[in-house]
Amino acid sequence: ETGVTQSPTHLIKTRGQQVTLRCSSQSGHNTVSWYQQALGQGPQFIFQYYREEENGRGNFPPRFSGLQFPNYSSELNVNALELDDSALYLCASSYPASPRGTQYFGPGTRLLVL
Amino acid sequence: DAKTTQPNSMESNEEEPVHLPCNHSTISGTDYIHWYRQLPSQGPEYVIHGLTSNVNNRMASLAIAEDRKSSTLILHRATLRDAAVYYCILRKAYSGAGSYQLTFGKGTKLSVIP
Image (cartoon, rainbow over the protein chains, first blue to last red):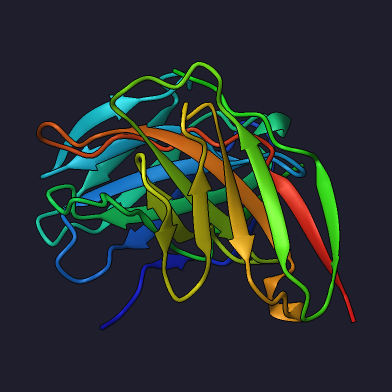
C-alpha cells in the first residue's frame, strides 16, 4: 500500500510568483486536506477536498486555492506569493467514513519565498 | 473549537516511561481526544485516540480523566525514535460527508536522553 506522497520536496520562489504543490493520496482515500506549518508552529488547516469539491476552509485568503482530481490526488495553488508563505506544506488523506477518521500525512513540501 | 494546553517541552531517559499531559477543560461530550506526533523532517502521524475509556495500542496508552478535562499519553519505554513533537487534538465525531479538520496547537517537544 502506497502512502501519501508530495512533490516537489523543496521549492524556492520569489515574492509575487505563483506555485503549485502536488499530493497523491493513500489508496482508497477520497479526502485530502492541506496544512501550512510555519517554523516552530503546529500545522494550520488550509482547506479540505472531498470527492473533488472543497469541503471546509481555514483562515486563509482566496489566493490559496486547490483542486482534487477523479483519482483523488490534489493540488494546492498559491498566487501572489508573500514572504510569510514560506513554510512546510503538508497534505493529508483520509477516508472519512472510517470510525477513527485518521488523517495520513505526507512528508511535506518546504517552500521558501525570497 | 475546544482548545488543548500542553507543556512546551519534556525530557525523558531512554527506556523509561513517559507521561505527556494535556488539559482540555472545555471539552464537549462529542469531542474525541486524538494524539498525533511529528518526528523531525516528517509529517504528523496518528498515535492514538479515545473518548471516555483508557485505550492501549502498540504505540502507546491513553489515560483519560473521569471528567474528561485532561488526558495523558503514556509511552511505556521511550526510545530515541520517540523523540518528536506530540500534539493533543480534540476532534468531533464523524457525522457526515467529508472529514473534519485537525486543529493543532504547538504540542510538546519530547527529547529522549540516551
